[in-house]
Image (cartoon, rainbow, N blue to C red; front, side, top):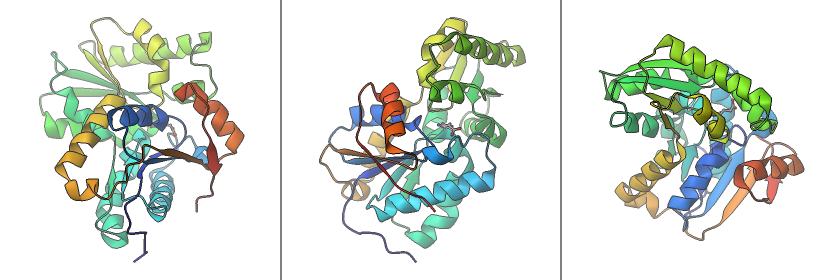
Length: 279
Ligand code: DGL
């Protein structure tokens, strides 16, 4: 069994790249007093088109590294990692690695919120190909609300548009319209659309423009932040293992300059970042 530092530590926030920064921003707004480490596996992103085995292996490596750095609690701020790796890590790895540490995802808190939002009980999910293929959203939503019909739409071009700083360009209009059209053609009764990828809030302006006005658009940041706040309140033993200094460290597996430059698109400010290798 590996030995991780037992002293209290920061909360770990992991994403394949930059998308998790949209979640981190809302988490820090809701819980500003805690310390955080953000880890983006930018060198190996995107995860959205990778196999289950690879996403699981990469995510596991990141979680182990965050535990080694003192985190007791890690949030997978990535739908693809939550869909493909979370369950195996929770069920198979944590009991062996350290049963007191916790890894939480972003799909469950999003699914929980849906029941009170949809009137027609027809919900759409816009996400990466990997998340859609995993069926995690329909499975999770049906468990909680069996009367809700869920249709998924993969949007493989949205993450590259955001990562290449093209979210506000004309190319984005074409692809935003295309995937929204494809989703609504599958089910015209959809009144709620989940943005099931942490990159998509960067396309929100255009998504709002092309989504019919009666469709409620659900973003995840506030939901995940609220759910974490609730989790820490219900688990005082974990809360006591999270340090409070109001700091945030940024780590990336890519070049530091590249991360700082792109992260500023997500955070509207420059950040200092350190490169690490995962294996
Ligand atoms: N941020 C990831 C998610 O929420 C998508 C990016 C990727 O494909 O790596 O699914």
